[in-house]
Amino acid sequence: MTLQAIKYQNNILHILDQLLLPTVSQYIPIKDVNDGWNAINKMQVRGAPAIAIVGCLSLAVELYNKSFDSKNDLLEFITNKLNYLITSRPTAVNMKLATDDLISLGNELSKDSSVTVLDMKMSFIATIEKMLEKDITDNKAIGDYGSKDILSNVSSKGGICVLTHCNTGSLATAGYGTALGVIRSLNSENRLERVYCTETRPYNQGARLTAYELVHDNIPATLIVDSMVAALMSSKKISAVVVGADRVALNGDTANKIGTYQIAVVAKYHGVAFYVAAPFTSIDKNIPSGNKIVIEERSEKEMTYIGECRIAADGISCWNPAFDVTPAELITGIITERGVFKPKELEGQFKL
Image (tube, one colour):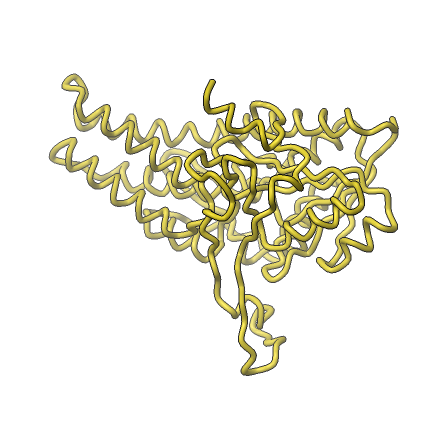
């Protein structure tokens, strides 16, 4: 049984506080949009799919017991709250796309004279609640498509080794995971010999979260520090790298956790396939290339402290971008719930 980072039932929302993992497993309540914004911004919940789901569910919780005089009042309330949620973590596109879809739904319902204010509110809530189930279904499809594509390019019939970066599993989604979903699928087919996960400095999502999930699921795994990737590929037979994405540009350039770009460069040098696994909603058709993606910069304390212990010299200046952009030419394939695409094939998917 995989971990459950998001618990939602009967309009009650709790999330697993990922700042406390792996030492403490504690769920915290999310009672309104302010709670949702703070949990996302502080990274108590993280991962592009989970950010969108928790953000939208925080709105559903707040809507449930609130009444409105008119559909216009309801639409204005929803629009303001959703646009506020986008500001919590600007690089991940999923929250922005969910916002656009919900506002579009609101405009349609507000113009329909047969829809009452209550009908409109309940329709919003029902639409948001479906996001949880859809995300799990999409993740399992990503896992299946990804494992098949990786195995189709491996000559050996035995077990393979893969490398992943950051956390892309049940803790970053509604369940199962994207890149970690691919790894789970490989493992379920008895084709995974070992997964190597990076510690993922400075926030240590790999050491704290991915390692926690892999141990929980009894998946054969080894943790490495970020600076060991080149040595690993030089000394071990790595069949593929599988990472997630916070935003994919139309040309295939991909923004993901800082450190992804350098892994892709090393993979290219060593002839290792490099895959990005993400739901189709992570592809931003309005961004032509990666140089248009806004990169979030975070507090220097994430670099200079581990917990409450300072590890860097006082007075040193810091640069702490949360993400980097991997150029499309370094990416073997982008794994989605609709299939695996070459970066150059993405634009055509929006013309179908």
